[in-house]
Image (cartoon, rainbow, N blue to C red; front, side, top):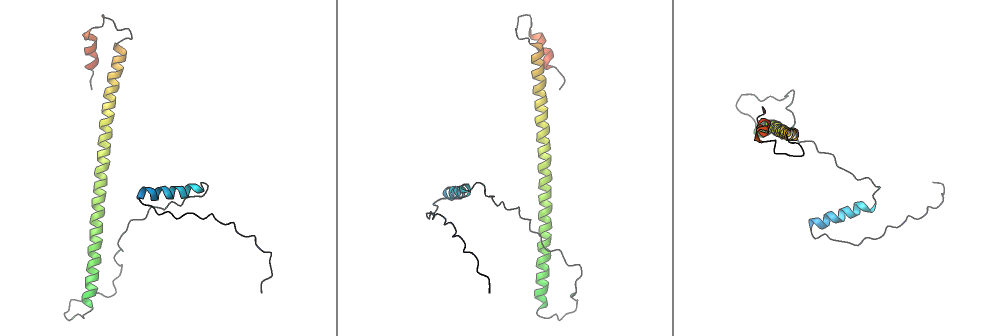
Length: 157
């Protein structure tokens, strides 16, 4: 029998919260945020990214190899059907992964191309800006004619 211990102090009671049924998604989100902000020191559980589904790899060693003789039992068809379904599923998965990889590569190439175009446009504008700053003094006079402008914009691009 356990030894008698000192009585515990009673737990502090939580304040009863009114039952609120959210009428929209925005209201539900607002209620969740309010609940999180009641205790800002409490850590918020952030779920990790789930791993992508992948089919089981084919077995290394097949124990019961189907023979080519006629007269297979009634259960053999179901075994064959399941094997075929798994193989088709595995092939579909590999095709989907190859397509995803191809799309990712295309996207990366597109990003690189857009980045190069943006850099070229920035360089062109920089040349134009530098040219204008060097050729046109702050006190624009009539001495500077169109001839000084022509040299500026005929720079090699």
